Image (cartoon, rainbow over all chains, first blue to last red; front, top):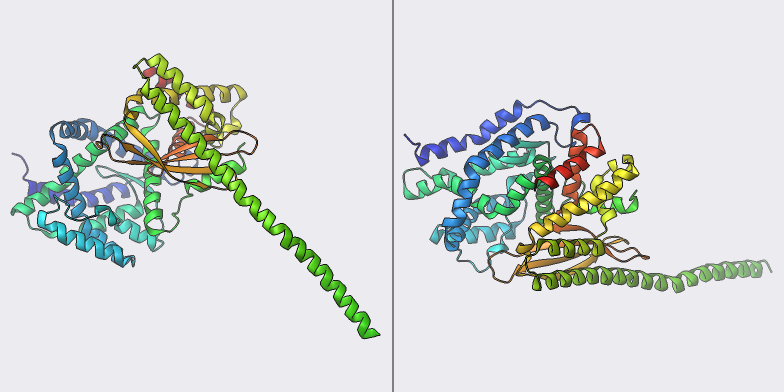
Length: 258
Length: 220
């Protein structure tokens, strides 16, 4: 009656493809009607956001709330460690592409060492030494334009560039080649849903603050996404993003505050 | 004779040139010395306002009895003293500030202040146990300083949070906080983008933003 973890994982892998189809079906909003120039598909993006919020209300928020109550801190830390560990091959791959060989080497070493515990326990001295890198950041380092803002059902906020990055990272991650059936395969199948619940639990209060206390949760989410993403790209690649930085906005305000 | 005249002309030119150079050479260190001094006083003023404000919050927390009215009074006083409310209002309204009437501006500043005070009062308990440590302060141009630091939870239950305070430092007025950045995300930029979205959805009516804010405040 219930889908097996393997089936869920197989379907989950189709999500990016479904997302692309949804995005392709979006109709563009005229510039004058946009609340942000980077968001030409605002009308359909808002519908996708409403869908995501409904999924959150009925599934994710209750699951994350139970997870916070029932899962001991040690268990939560182990899950967070495992999720971080499974992302290390992508960091190695993307750091190499970006020419950041030290980070590539470090992430490969961390992955190898922590594979002894399947990433559940971090055995390295300084886990924060590795700077997480995804293919979206690699594209940014190659000066690929950011593209438009896309709110993707179930996947959340993206830009065309970061969505492409997520798909490439999903396809190139060697962890995704593990065959289902073995215990590692089952773990792999459960990883995505568990990671999503764990992340929602880790951001429980700030997420709820945006969801319940914002004047326009959609616009606030978009702003937070752009600033967070720009911060990551600026900090880790050292190149300016396509958007005006926060400093620029304040500088121009102070020059002409009226 | 001609050679002598040319030599004299050349010497006069060199003297003039040297005179200008000497003036520049003499003035440049003074000008340069003035710049770091200004930057230093900017940084000191900004760091001082943050230290003072954090001290006041810690004092409120130490004597807090859970009385919401008292909390509201304390936090409101904190905002009025240390925050540039008009600057925050102007920035967060974006280009629509210019189009707003005087009355709308006054109402907006008041409503925005009440919303901010309400938000802090609602989350006041979460501030308990947090210690702020300043990491560094850097001048951002001549009128602003970014004071960066970390909030650490004394119990260790919550991870450290990096915070940046954007403090405006006018030469003829006290330094005041304009923005708070949490994990490199500017609260003011976020608020501005949200506000602009609301005004644009309502055909550019600034009053629609004020109505939405009042509605939200009443629903809490």
